[in-house]
Length: 296
Length: 308
Image (cartoon, each protein chain N blue to C red):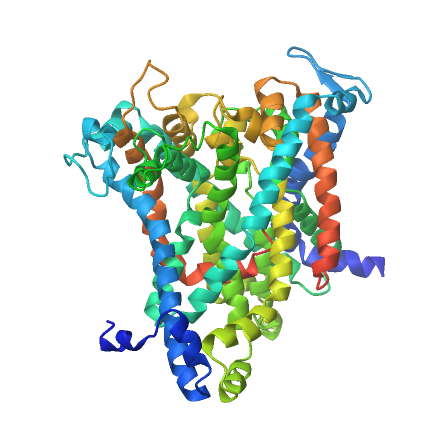
């Protein structure tokens, strides 16, 4: 038996060679860092020389750190805002795209709505810093037409938070809409046929057939968005400024600041470990609820 | 496109009156109204997406002084490409652009090649150790790169990769997501085909090259295009591993340029047309690529909704 296995393995030696880089890569850049991160969270790093084991001191420090709790609160506020307010727009977009009168118009609209998702947060953030500026930015100029403003979108904490919620919704609406659209396409056409015969209007068909059948997709998208909540980084990093930083900094930007800028690697690792454990727990729950990973 | 038929559409409470007037009548009119509503919604939506970019392009092509003036700019004022020259030559965005091209090209090629290799191995039947390897690879999908940025920084430091483009190429060089997606494509290739090739004496690698690769072009193109976009947009790894500004990629060089608060620094006065020119340069390659992506991106998103 064992000899047989060895022989099979030898005859497929090429296959093992092919997958070797992948295994090595994940060992070095995923699994080893996991160990390294866990270890660092119990260590203190010196600028020169090696790390020193200090037990759970980093975790205690994090726990007692006021800024940490502030960034947790910001993350929940901004992430939660994106989760809640960003839930319906993609569904509306997908339903509208599905109802578009001509295929050309649908394609055009779909292409356009997806466009911002294609670009980095540097591009989107840099662009909106300009558009939202109180001194001549497009949005404030438009608001001036109706005698509103100028609104300090990025230098007032409340407005800055709202902007941090609104922009990712604007940016990623088209992306999520395509997921919904794909799921709409898979709905059995005979359902609509039957509804038409019963005299249902297009709106009724949408409201009473399409929407309820999208529920499973809604669940999946919502669950996946929960996992994204703790990972918010780029948008805040790009758009923050010293005036509102305290109000919009999130966990990950704090980890970056503490770890990379201030070289408090142990402290930053302790936060990372806590966030990672939370994410793994959430992932397990999400997989259970949505039934992911069951097919493999 | 809307001729007199538009006039027939009743507005306001008249719609409600009509609604009770019989099935046939109700169907026609409310459907038409619904159609117009949908069209209006989509047109507004498209404007919300396009106008900001339009404004950026118009400012990028405006003169330096004109770009600072107040007012809505939807057409270049004092048309000039000066902003592009300043950002490309004087602010040396070209160096960062070249770095981005290098990292994107090498990174994407390696990503696609290694994902194909792994996916092919993982569809083999009766290969000893396959299940363990599969679990080993899939488990990495539960660990988002952002969350291990600090240990990744330490690891790159230990490997002496800091301040090299290799650190950027290695970052995200392989993902469980791509392997899984390609594996699904490969699984769609009839196994009998490989089996009969094997009987004819073809090696594993030969079967991979001559049967699986040609039959999975759509899948490979999907992976390649998505990787290309995410490589081009790569940001966090650059600010983690690179200090040396000569090794900055486009996104990070651009970040320094566009997020600087207007006029507050005093040391340098970068006018809006220059900043927006930088943004136009950063999005141009993706905009050019976009029409070719169209064919694949719906498939990629729906298959890959696991990724985000």
